[in-house]
Length: 66
Image (tube, rainbow, N blue to C red; front, side, top):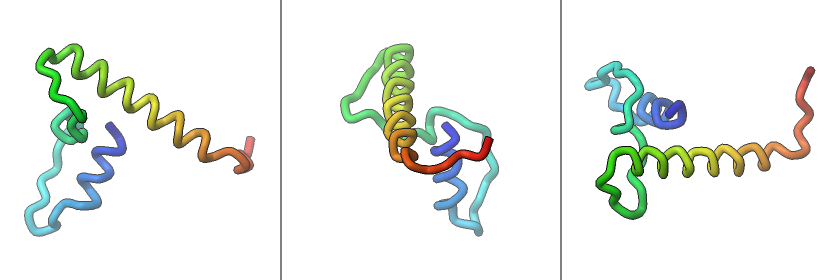
């Protein structure tokens, strides 16, 4: 959801910008249409977790201050 909000902020036309809360309308659609709202949100969550894992693996080798 944070990535979708960031994309909205980055790509919005400043002349017509409207602040908004996080909502599923900001998230990219699934490859296959899912009518059931619960199933759709579960698939979106699974996709997000997969993307976060790929991002985390991309950080390998970076030193984290602790």
